[in-house]
Length: 370
Figure: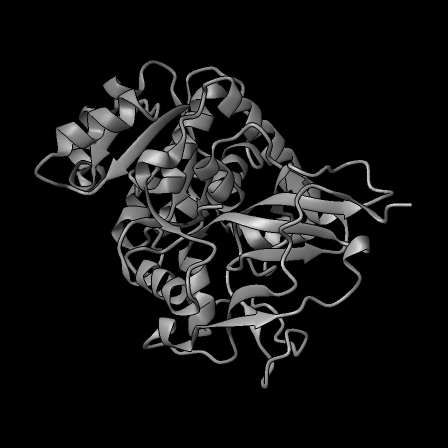
């Protein structure tokens, strides 16, 4: 009797992964190396996958620097001289084989890891159980590779804290050009929630604002100078929001003055969620907002949310897949800088591609060209 369902006879006897055993705050890419190893365990009892693509996220780099609160456990399971971990937290895989008793997954399915710290910067991986993975069939490569962090973050920010009624309700967010913010505006629009997105002042402000509104569904885009202008807030903003508007949620990923300015626009007993600090300045909130308007300010960390309640990630992914299939969300492919890697490339070429992606600006995704 065949031990497991086979999809391809190309599962190698050795896997190849980008690993690290130490950290460097000054030069994160320097701690990386490429390592070949024989996977532990009987593959007939494991889910075997090959990596299609993986993004390079800021949190991945923070792990290499040693400053991220969530870190993978370093181990000798890969046959290294020192305890090591495989880098990367996000990526999309193609299932090559599953145990004979497994019915929820089949060879050829596209999947992403349920948990963080699984080590995605690798050409192949194994997982103990199908429940360790979430199916993402039907998505394009770049959406599937990045849905687990930015997509889930945006969906939870919009849906997990406010019971929206649809009666001229708004959320306000800074860093309106970020990947998360662009998904937030689309998810909110699909839910009937209006968005006020704040972006940095720039020479081509009108062009950028129009793109955010036309392509990514932002209801209105304003500049940081407008955000910080009390006269604008009193005179121009009411006309933008309309009659009986309720600004119920603020999403802060900048900090500093920007955070206090978006908080000032909230209604009484509203909520501000902070999920980033691009300015590297503290979140500053006027005392009056807490005393007289009942403001609640909370932190948001998608990794911890999903660790505590894994089902919330599964639910968010399923909802996001439907939104993409229905055309309510656009693929992030135009926002991504893809670097193709031949699976037969040398170790040094693979390492160069990853190190280059870390040092390059923009959203970087490494794609294996199987």
